[in-house]
Image (cartoon, rainbow, N blue to C red; front, side):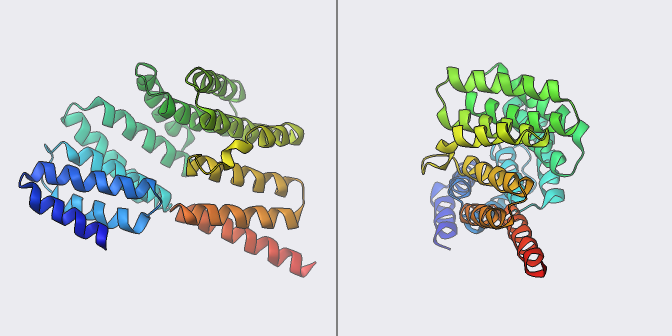
Length: 277
């Protein structure tokens, strides 16, 4: 691709291998955030080949983080966990506490997907504790919302609410409207699992700012996913199918291929059920 060619030209023109690695990893991260996952994946694989055996290179933990996030977005959970674990090892060797803490957060998210909830919560708590001492409110809000979901799934409702209250306070203080919306979505998820459909509907309404074009893709997708689940709880198959299809398109458009497959599968199953009625 042109992006990979650009990355290689940057590497060749830089002269300094460490600078070249940093340029390629940065380019991979940009494409990942734009939802261009195939391009990002090609770039990061190229970077990791260049970084093989160079455990002292400061770009290696960052490259492993990008690779871990990409694998998570593709729902390749074993691969994602391996990347985050290696990142944690390298970051510890390099005494990079920032990358190590982020790797803890990534591992927590992956372990939650694997239903390894106790370990997931521990990793997320580590990441949150690190972030509380820094001025990174966006990352802290995201981590607290993920922690709240893990606590809820563990049956620790009070702890989940505590994490959401902290998340909401941080997002408000930092004036982060889209992150406030993400916390509302997380509250809606909690309410739905407590069978409070009215509260869930309220949270969806309050969080509609999530659908703004400037909202992070992950927040837009979370809103659509919650709407789809709420429609299923309402036993409204037609609305649930439409919501899952919308979530699939949102996921696919932004490189979340694993989630896109999930929503596509649920929509297909619902359509099949409806056809047999």
